Length: 201
Image (tube, rainbow, N blue to C red; front, side):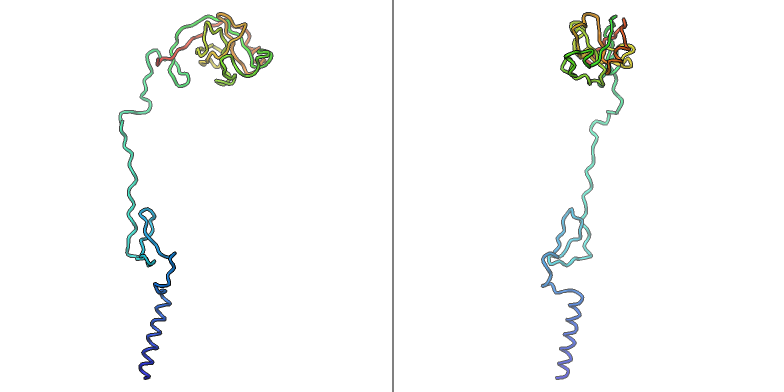
């Protein structure tokens, strides 16, 4: 009888020790169940939540490679068309002709524009277009959008014709300045004006 009691006591002690190391599978909460996802990078687990340390992490697929279809293209290989001299708005220009013209100046305020000093040009563009570097012309001579350059104005850069005026007739231009004082300093010039056209047309 004593031997049987001793055997039962030892068995109970072994079972108790096992419960200290790991809880019985039946009491595992459902939240401890882990499943392997192909993209999660976590270890795959047993349906009941027992993680097998001998299982490897899922193999990630390599990133896609970019294939260059046209390998003959290289930056800076563009060749401007014949007659190219300058650019405007990223397009090549060639000189079309030169006209001798009277060039005066104006400002966008009331002293130059009177009741039309609303910041909008006759072409329905604002006076702030092209950094306030634009020209008023007789549109029967130089239509809206004509590109010209004038020595001494806007650093001799190419500027558009975007305005006109009642006193601007024939070979007469009016160049825009931000202030009335700057316009008065320009004065009146008889000067050669270069007319430009797009060289890629």
